Image (cartoon, rainbow, N blue to C red):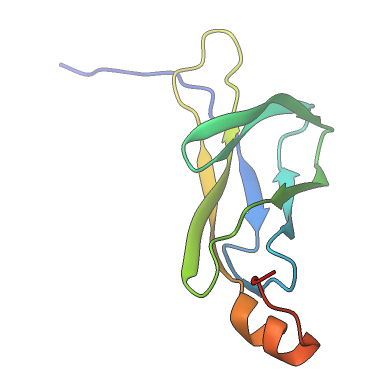
Length: 123
């Protein structure tokens, strides 16, 4: 018995796959480049830490776009881990979604910055 399956799969890319940043303010702008390898426009959902933050980001045929987001309230003096993903929105009848993620490590050395600037939390 032979089974044949026909599936449309969306091909896409995302870079970088890993990011390490030092924040000087407790907030950090993060940018990723998302590419559509298909011969027609495609749509992608954007996810930060398992929550959809943008739906149906359109990227033209064989094109790419830079998506940027500010990560706020970075916990001081520890490495903060985040994950920013692009997930293909399948066409009607398609079964699979592709998902590519960028692993993000952020450090906000608040105490060191305050020492350098002479500022303190005490008032």
